[in-house]
Length: 132
Image 1: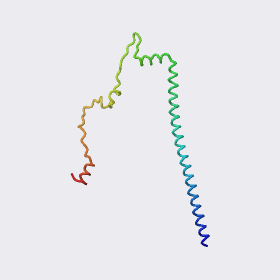
Image 2: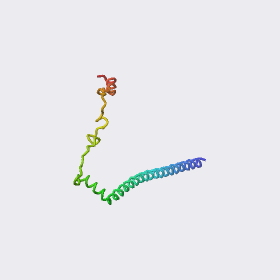
Image 3: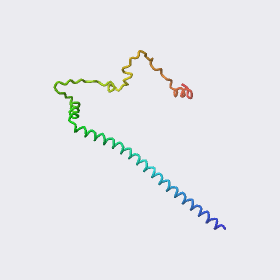
């Protein structure tokens, strides 16, 4: 009787160990599958960006065959002009200083007062708990 009970306990323990081992293996396989799917998604995103870049390069190469485009790009790059041609330089306000152009050229006559300083609540808590 004692031997049968001990055999049941050992069999149950061995069965639980086998179940735990298989669960671990299945979990590890599922995690590896997840990592593969993540990597596939990353690679698909890279393929999309590379295809877009490839299209840009193809259109650039197509434009290189056009002599008018080459002449225009050469003039822009080396600041060249042909005889009888006038060139005007235009300053782009968005490039200057990195400021917001809407604030820079505002025609509004309303002026806002300087922003009031907000109280620092953490200082209030420190003085509350520890005093001055």
